[in-house]
Amino acid sequence: MPNMVQDKVVVITGAGSGIGREFALAFAAEGARVVVNDLSRSEAGVSAAELVVQEIKSAGGEAVASVESVAEWDSGLRIVETALDAFGRIDCVVNNAGIVRDRFFFNMSYEEWKAVVDVHLNGSFFVARAAAPHFKKQASGSYVHMTSTSGLIGSPGQANYSAAKLGLVAMSKTIALDMARYNVRSNCIAPWAWTAMTASVPADTPEAAARLEKLKTMEPRKIAPLAVYLGSDASAEVSGQIFGVRANEIYLFSQSRVIRSVHRSDGWTPESIAEHAVPAMKTFFYENIPSPQLTTWDPI
Image 1: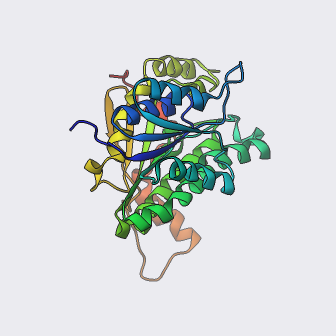
Image 2 (image 1 turned 180 degrees about the vertical axis):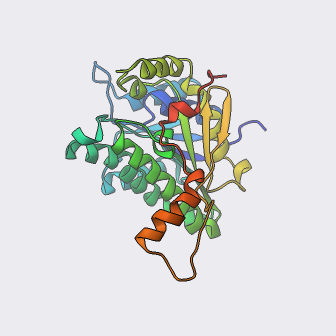
Image 3 (image 1 turned 135 degrees about the vertical axis):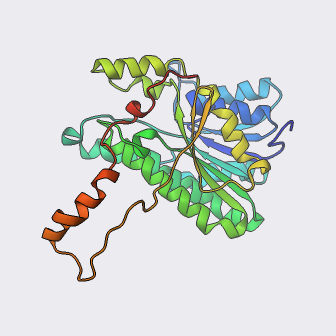
């Protein structure tokens, strides 16, 4: 199916480099008109978003740049307005913008917490919410949110990032429920890729260093085909799901469901919980381990 997103208008945040840049190039190559959103600039002061726009135009595609921050309500509105002003509509939002401020929880500052939550979680809400009335009116639209195994499973030194990324999953699920009647879908992707953001993660143990070496083999461009698919009409029946991409592998993640229950006809006391409830459920407990321990095989 050539040009799966032909003439669709997609807003991609954090699209000046890394995974976001690959998304922008891939959507454009499949016929989409792209709003490339990014705040960053090169050392020479050139807008990263403008550079990607020029790449797209040089290849015969259509794109415009947006240098607004995602982390404010008003600027989120302006990002979506850029799509409407340039192309007259909006069909897909890819919430990809992100930063990290890694530190162990017991040392994490208010500023480090807030900065990460503002970009990943609040920023994704602001841009998604700005697009929602337009999606609702046209009875179509797609959201693609970038989550992380740091939130889905856990990662040391990333309480801020993990909380924001798992919050995104909850937001995506609720968007999928709230907007299903308007044929609007919402899904998440957890990417494994070597980018400037992952390169900043400290490798202060042999295990962390080994993990980063594996990440270097996972190219950001490998994530893009799934995002394009989720933005296309071919994914009309796919919503509320959590996917992962790791080199040439695509994962579907499980979601929280009740797996065990116990009851007492006379109710519970703290003592009976200790004696009966927890022992009955303990064999079903999950190990408290970080995400790299669950993907121990090399990228394929």
